[in-house]
Image 1 (cartoon, one colour):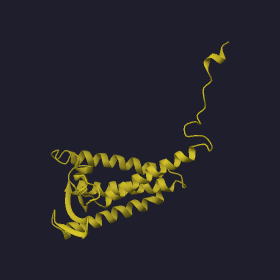
Image 2: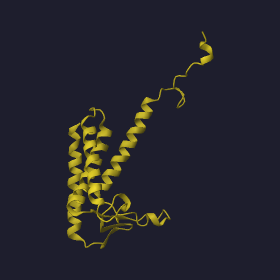
Image 3: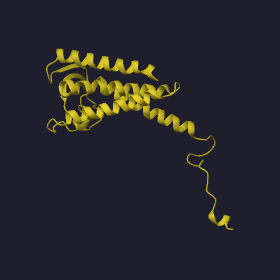
Length: 182
């Protein structure tokens, strides 16, 4: 379903435009409060999600870029092979593709991913969430895309369940071997 690639391109364009704007608007680590518990703060992540491998010494740049490229190619192939009626799955894949390419561009061009959205979650009394690790439009698209894939998986499981039988009871039972003696 290549007609969903427009969504990937839109995510990529919005991601790169917002990063360009923030790179020109803010200094690194400068905080601009948008509303309480939501800041724009320019940060750079040399690692993966939650800064995993950020302090690895530089080799992770090309490892993570190569991994992102391989995953993106696989997701594009999957997207192109979808049937027309698989719209929720297509939307999820397109969002993930756009986000992955957005962060891939950063990693190749800058050597790091540009993050700038900083959220505080004061209703969760854990230091991990205050603030939540900075993220960007690409990360948001990837997260929403993964949520759509999970939702589609749950929907597919519900469609596969026969009606009127408890979950897991629809499997055909194997006959006892004692009943089939010659």
